[in-house]
Image 1 (cartoon, rainbow, N blue to C red):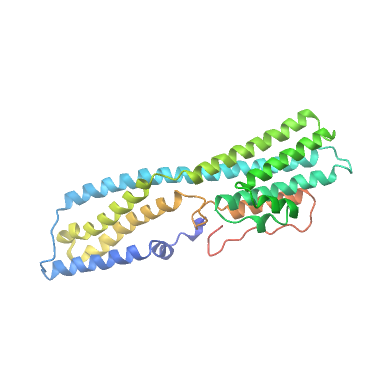
Image 2 (image 1 turned 90 degrees about the vertical axis):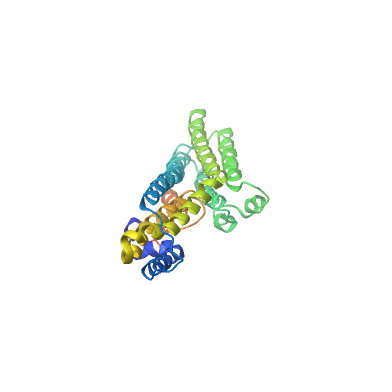
Length: 299
C-alpha cells in the first residue's frame, strides 16, 4: 500500500511512466506539424473531443469505483481477520482450563493462529508458505501440509480438532467451546471472501477497454486541441492526458488487491501486527518487529 504522504508529483509522473512520455512526444509532433503546416495534420473540431473526454471519464469512474470496492472489501475482510485472531488468542489462552496439563495446548493454539494468517497471506499471493510457517508448526505437520492444496484451511481444520480434543479432556466446557468455534467460523468466512476476490477478477473487458479508449483519447487529444491552442497544445494535452492515464492506472492496480504490488492491501504488515499481538499475549518479551515502509510502500 502506497502511503498517503508519498503522493508527490514526481512520484506520480514516474508511476505513469512511458505512456506519459510517449504522450508528450506525440503532443510535440502534432504541434510542430500544425505550426509548420505539414500535410500529416488532421484537424478535428473541439466538440467531439469534449464528448469523448466526458464519456471516457464516466467509463473510467465506473471501473475505478468497482475496483476500489474490491480493494476496500479486501481490507475490511482482513480487518475482521485481525479482530477474530485477537479474540481467538484471548479465548484460547483464558477460556481453556489454566492447568499445567493444558498449558502446552493453549500456547500451541495461539501459535497456530500466527501460522494460519501467514499461510493465508502466502495463499492469496500465490507464494510458497512453508518457510513462513515452519517456525510456528511442528516439522511433521509442515511436511504433511506440502501435499495440501489449501494450506491455511488445513491449519484451521487441525486447530478445530485440537479444540475438540481439549473439550474431550474436560479442559473447556460446551459454552466456551461454542464461543471458540464461532471465532473459527468467522475466520473461515473471511478467508472465503478473500478467496472469492482473488479467484474472481473483474471481467477482462473492465481492464482492456478502459485502457484502449484512454490511449485512443490521448492520441486524438492534441489533434483536437492544436487548432485552438497552437503552441500551448503540449501543455494542455499533457495535463489532461496525465489525469486520464492516472485514472486508468489506478483502477487497474486496485482491482486485484492480493497481487503483492505497491497498491495492494498490506498483508505482510497486517500479519505481522497479528503476530506481535499474539506473541505478547503469550507473554514473550522478544516479539517480532513491525513491518516498516520500503520507499513509502507498506507491504
